[in-house]
Length: 80
Image 1 (cartoon, helix red, strand yellow):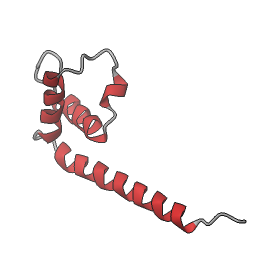
Image 2 (cartoon, rainbow, N blue to C red):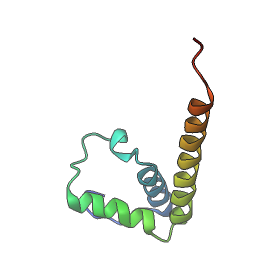
Image 3 (tube, helix red, strand yellow):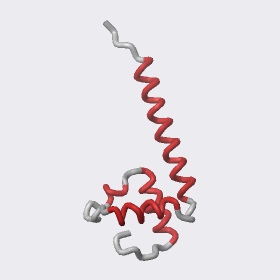
């Protein structure tokens, strides 16, 4: 992503998936997260790697987890 090289389909799909999950910066903290690198990561996410659908699935899953946690938190009443 830093030098703009064309990745293999597998690397592009993995990078796009990890970017879509929001965890890519954790995997290599030495990457200089400039606007150009972020744009490249977004391109990989939206690329023709099948990652767009995976990114949507990750987003839906995270939303479902958050909604479930909120429902559980609201239904548990403190004893007192």
